Every structure is written in structure tokens, then in C-alpha cells.
Amino acid sequence: MMTQTALSSKLEAKLKARFQFKFPKKYKLSFGYLILLIVPFCIAQMLDMDTKTVYAQVLTIINLLAIMAFFIQFPLGSRLKQFPIFTHIDWSVERHKKVGKWLGIVFLFHPILILAPRFLFSYNDGVKSLIEVITAPPMLTGLIAWGVLIAWVCFSVYKNKLPIRYETWRLAHLIGFVAITILATLHITTIGSHGQFQSNFNILWWVLCSFSLAMVVYNYLVKPTRLKRQPFTLNSITKISSHDWQVTIEQKSGANFYFEPGQFVWLNTSKSLHGVSEHPFSIASGKQDLPRLSFIIRELGDYTSSLGNLIEGQAVYIDGPYGSMSLNDSNQSTGIMLIAGGAGLGPILSLLRGLAAQNDTRPIRLLYGNNLLSQMALVDQIKGYETQLSHFKLQLICQEETIDPNQVNQPIYQGIIDKQIIEKNVDLCAINNWSVYLCGPKPMINSVNKSLKELGVKQSHIHYEQLSF
Ligand SMILES: Cc1cc2nc3c(=O)[nH]c(=O)nc-3n(C[C@H](O)[C@H](O)[C@H](O)COP(=O)(O)OP(=O)(O)OC[C@H]3O[C@@H](n4cnc5c(N)ncnc54)[C@H](O)[C@@H]3O)c2cc1C
Image (cartoon, rainbow, N blue to C red):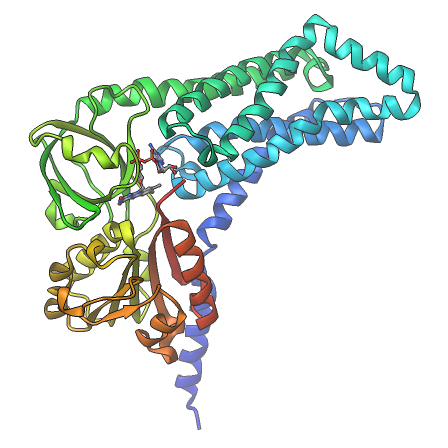
């Protein structure tokens, strides 16, 4: 029989758990985003905007939400650490891309939705309105903004299929959307019901336009000038596998860079800081290695394939740290699984180094997968943690069919990181209380996420970083 004290302490624990419940981070961010989104609509309501028909009312609501969503694209696509809802860059960039696609569709239909009822009532009136729209000089700003916006959204959605460099796309994306913002604001404030009903209301659009442009100036002019004052030096650059480099940089005295294992920075090794020649890389070193930082970089395209040209001792600049993957998220977990695919080893190694620094005694597993055996990097160093951490085990996974385990002196699972190998490395009875950190290319993240869910790992216990935006 349970005693009175045992019962009350059980109740106490239940109540505690209930009141300790935290609203998940992504819901808080989505809530903040929605609040910002409805600001113009609420202001329009306060100013008592008069709309003639229900249809016009619905269109006004859609347009107000879409215009605000367009302006919020700037902070979502920027790297702002100062404003809490925009500090989670992975979340922001993901939203930026999704919302961008929807805005392309909404704005594509914008003129159609305005003209359609006129065609429905009278074909001749419809044609007359269409000609007026196309030929009226005040409509020119809107027409250009509309055409360029549709083209630029398509340009972004299909950027990986186009034969252009990432840097060229980024510059064109920036210039295009600055032009669209100015033209669209001119259109909103001169044409259309929400631009004309009260001149005070137009102040809102010009304020939003100015903020958006100020963000571009901050990111491309102010911030680089600040970063120039805090240079790092390239300490060493070493080839650590057939496709990976280890780049180590050191902060010159004076500045105080701080990061959490699992975070990443934008690394700039070029002379010009005001351009678009910076790349995101995760920190692979531990906090204890500061003021040195190291990165594991896989050769992929033009920049990463020319890393061998860097000169030891040269100045490099970093913007960061960013990213919300953190060991703090697994404080309550009874075990930790680290999963790295290819270049995803960097942040996973930083997390492992963090766990080693705190002498973590929980069961820790590292699954490290590559297509080729020759791509396995730092295997001996990682294996060394098996003696340092009492319950740590490394499992290599390789897709190559003819593999010689003697080459890396470690048993290898032949295949990809699938449900079977995860199952083998985890205590299935305790999986509910394990946390998983996952890093690698997007297809790998998607397939491992699916396996983890099938095995019963809670979604809130899976923390991942995919190596692309
Ligand atoms: C958060 C994050 C962390 C990353 N960490 C690592 C890491 O630790 N190690 C590693 O090897 N790779 C990492 N990457 C990937 C790395 O940034 C790209 O491989 C690299 O930028 C490719 O540049 P490239 O010129 O050689 O190739 P490209 O052929 O020019 O680019 C290949 C792809 O990389 C992405 N990319 C290129 N340049 C940029 C840029 N300036 N900003 C954003 N994306 C870009 C684009 O998706 C592009 O399609 C990370 C990516 C992200 C988003």
C-alpha cells in the first residue's frame, strides 16, 4: 500500500512536471511571427478602413497579410541576434523559404483577383480595366514589381537547377528584392485601397520599407566593417580524408568569441568583406579549445574545392555563432545518440567534445556514415573518446560494397544509416528518454528522422542541422 507521504510526493512531482512544461521553441517563434503578421490589419481596423463589399474586404485582408509577410522576409533572411524571434536562424531561413514560395503564389494572383469580378460582371468592362491597368503610368511601379517578384521567386525556388554560382544567385537575389521593395512600396502607397484610404496609414509602409532596406545596409556594410576589427588568423589547414579538410583558426587577442557546441559561423577567407563570399560552417572544436576554432570542411563546389589555396597566417573573418542545436536540450535525457553523415561530422564532434569536457557518464553512441571508406575522417581521434568516456561507442557506416575493416581498425556496418543500425546501437526500452543529435545532408536527415520516429524517439528529442539552407 502506498503511504500518504509517497502519494503526496507523487502528486507533487506530477504538478511540478505540469507547471514546468515549456512551450516548445518553434511554437513560440510561430506565435511571435503571427503577431507581427497581423499588425497592419489591426492598424487598419483601428483607423476604421472602409471597404465596400465582402469580396473587397477579403481581398484587403489577404493583401495586408501578404504585404506584411513580404516585409518580414527581410529579418527572416538576415542574421539578427538582437531580436529574439529572429535569432534562430535555421527556423528563420526555413520560414523565409516557405513563406517566399507562398508569397509568389499570392502575388501572382493579386491582379487576377482584382480584375476577375469585373470580367464576371461584364467582359467589356473587364477588358477596359485590364487595358487601364497595363497602360496607366501610376501602375507602372506595381507592374514592374509584380513581374520581377514572380521571376525572382522562381529564380530562388529553382536556383539549384540553374547553371549559376551560389554567390551570383545571392547577389542577384539581394539586388532584385531591394528593387521590388521600393517599387512595391511606391505602388502600395499610391494605388489601391489600403494605400489611399488614409495618408497616415502609408507611414506604416514607408517605415517597413525603410527598416527592410536598413537591414540590408546593416548586413552588407555595417556588420562587415565591425567584423574587420575582430580578425582571426588561419593557423593550419590539413587534409584529413580523401574529401575533407580540417581548418583551424585562432582569434587575435582582445576580442571574446563565445559559442555552444553544435553552432555554426559564416566564414570569410576573402579580402573583401562587403561582398557575398562567405560560407556557413559548423564549429568542430570544443569550448575548451578557444581561442582556437576548427572546422571540418568537405569539398563540394568552387569554394570548398579551392581551400588548399589558403595561406597559413592569413586573416579570416567570422560572423556568428548561430544555430540553436545545444547540449542543454538533452540535460534530462538518459542517453545520447550522435549521428553524422559526411560533412556533418563537424558539429557532432563539437558536441562529443562538449560531453567529454563535462565527463558525461550517460551512454553515448556516435554513428558516423560516409559513402566511401576513404572519406572517414579523424577515426582514431574519435575512437580515443571510448577510453575517456565510460559509456561511449563509435559505429562506422559505409556504403562501399568491398570494405576492408582493417583499413580503419574498426567494425563497419555496410550500407546507409538506417533503422537497423540505429536499433543495434540504442537501448530500445529506454529510447523514450534518449536525445538524438543529427547532422548531414538533407536527404540523410529526412531518412534518419523517419527511422527515429518509427523507433519511437520523441520528435522533441531529435535535434538536427542540415548542411544547406
Ligand atoms: C548551417 C550550415 C552549416 C554547415 N556546416 C558545414 C560544415 O561543418 N562542413 C562542411 O563541409 N559544410 C558545411 N555546410 C555546407 C557548406 O556551407 C557548403 O558546402 C559550402 O558553402 C559550399 O560552397 P562551395 O562554393 O564549395 O559550393 P557551391 O557549389 O557554391 O555550393 C553548393 C551548395 O552549398 C550551399 N552554399 C554555398 N555557398 C553558400 C553560402 N554562402 N551560404 C549558404 N549556403 C551556401 C548552397 O546550398 C549551394 O547549392 C554547412 C551549411 C550550413 C547551412
